Image 1 (cartoon, chains in turn blue, green):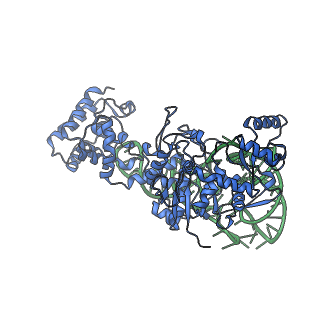
Image 2: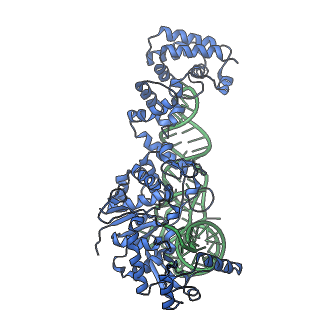
Image 3: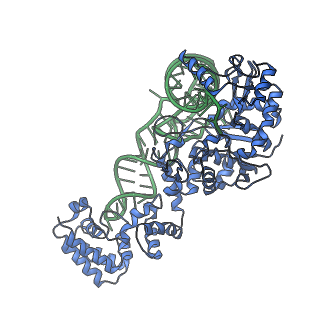
Length: 508
RNA sequence: GGUCCGUUCGUCUAGCUGGUUAGGACGCAAGAUUUUCAUUCUUGAAAUCAGGGGUUCGAAUCCCCUACGGACUACCA
């Protein structure tokens, strides 16, 4: 019964992937790699009406960015191709035909309008129409029509669909790796369309055929598929593929943090955090949705965040690399209930990852941001500023807020600080400090001692008051790292210039 | 409406085979440190384990019911 682990991630190219989908891909990847198995990327584009150009490339780029590597797939090929369902189109019909021959499916000629009318009629009676074992006898299909009539309609090119024929009153068991045994009675299930009138299979048919022919061993997908899992189980049975049926694991959903319901693509930026891994430019509306990458999240952080949304290793450590997650992951430890995304915790994860970066790396990431702000600065200087401030940043972009004053003299001074600290004799003291700076060797410790001990302490002055005003002139606010570090980075001339400007500009 | 799945601090969760002061993390609060802000450190508040019944000497942990939430209910995936 030992079978090679082969899992697939099978998105539809109907737009950008959202983080729920990314998490599904991630869990599949953890599972595959842990078992030395294969990870397959299959594109499920059987709905031609929902195709969105660029979506497939987006999906591949996003997964690549996150470090999810595939063994086979639409972008790299493999021995089980093609990996795009539209490219597999010719192979599906024979399977639909097979099910009709074996009595597991039937032709249905009901027009979409007819079905819609019936649904409306049922609705008006507060009932719900379902094409199933109770209603199919009243419909236009190969079960109710004579063989000649069916042949006539088929030959004349009348549009039809193929529907699955659920056997009556049969208990169907789905063995889910996360939820255990789930049972459903076939009487409640509807005769799903397997093959559409446009000649394409539906998800249900294509999915089973592809998973079977690609020798998929485990289907790890979102919980929204649980209700149709009995159909899939029955299809394996109908095809006689029960012995190699993959094992199912239905993942809990990622929920909207505000109200209710599952997170969806349409949530876009509404929730205060990106729902997409990468920024997405909608080709139709031109609308831009933000992405984790562009927001400054590191892919390792996103992987870590997503790994912990619905799964937990049971130890207190929370920061794990991809390799560690692959080792630790287990389907058994996936929670059963949906998880809400917490932006604050996500920020914390990114903060942790940012701290692990070297000053050189951070400087390299920060330089383009500085340039975009119109700042031209030496990398060496930027690196010093980064070293002083990185622990205060969660995202590379936060560094601007933390370091801008190194590159631009303040044009405004925080009124709250002026009110609290700036006194009538402040200019006198600051002028004295200018004098000290100009006459003392320009070294951090020497200057520090000269100002603090040699002036403030010696004259029994108010330390907080003098130092804060000093800072206010250099920074423009009561923030930033050690003041003498700032002085060293700014240099003697700039420090003095800013002090002079502050003295001139600030009035009580 | 029907079917299925779920329910431990605000959030993510530990707690798997019944006996814990129900643990951790994020966030929050306070204190310490600092010339400021932030960081960091310490401490704290925070879940009567959805509610109600059982079973048991003993239940968050097992069983049942109810409530609530969610998913699905297309010729979409």
